[in-house]
Length: 243
Image (cartoon, rainbow, N blue to C red; front, side):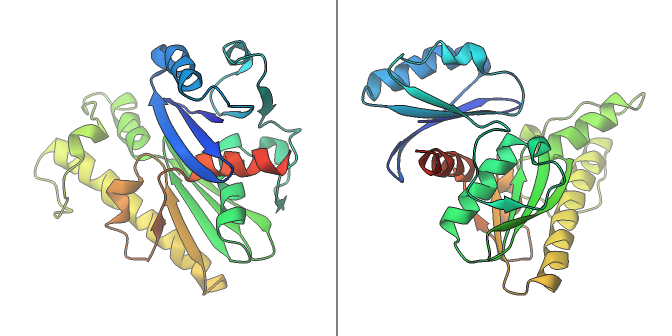
């Protein structure tokens, strides 16, 4: 079992070896009940790995059955890749899991993993299995929130209100101007980042994942592969690496 504690929701997945058999997403208020339901449906779960970017997971361990061996994706867990990061303990658990998934799913390839969540993260992995580092920038919702928070009159918008096909870059209302500028600005950022890395690695494989990935994947000019459960697969890869 893999458990991902994100900034806005919890996700769990059950694997039989490398085969994904179930995925569940929960609001934080319903996570304990949801997790117990997973174990009721899959009583043979023997091992679990927990990743958290937002909070401590010590209280979560008490929910798991006592016979389940639990691994924590922390600074001490051995990884299946090398990294040039100055301080690997500061590399987020979510990014570690995504890199681990790239190692397993795209062996001996140059890979750029882009995660479109609360923040947008970029991680570059070369064909030797070495992580070069990457980047972090505000996600779509965070960009909208920032304009509302740091100005006097701009409204608070939700990306959920803007999940429509966007054609016009020029907004004819404040709502459209904010929505379109953040949307197309993020498109331009992602495309530019991909082009930059492709200048160094012409055979680059680009992976797009995260909650906002379906919205942006169809608009990017570069060829990308969208993976909805890439982080969960990476957690499972790290779990198997440590058995």
